[in-house]
Length: 178
Image (cartoon, rainbow, N blue to C red):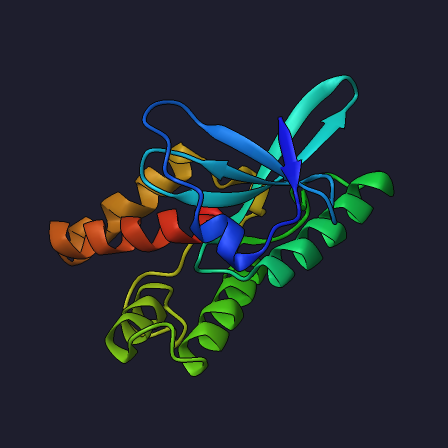
């Protein structure tokens, strides 16, 4: 794989791939890569762990700055070196929601999210604890497809398929990358 110093102009000038994913390494943070696909560009952490190559998606470009992704990659890399898991095994779904909502709030305050989108996320994550049934109070590692489907069925029973689909979109956004 090719390495170069990630700059805004260099990343802006990389064309989208016509087929599979193309990866480039950053020379300043060597385990940070930019992955170029057919539909977009994303930052990833690239690390060999116990003989296996692992990649962790950090965020999409240009939504996140190079500096933000370098810092995030370094924090995750240090955690891995200290022997911590890539995903917090003991984190509850509610602590995860709190972190995600804090992140969304920061983006809203910076003007990168519309007010209507922010309010929709707030409503669907049940931040005000009034609109939708509470998510199950379980560890994040135990919130699998089965648990998600049970929750989405409960949403559909009490509300509608449209509301269920909006909640599914919110859950997917929460779990993609963050």
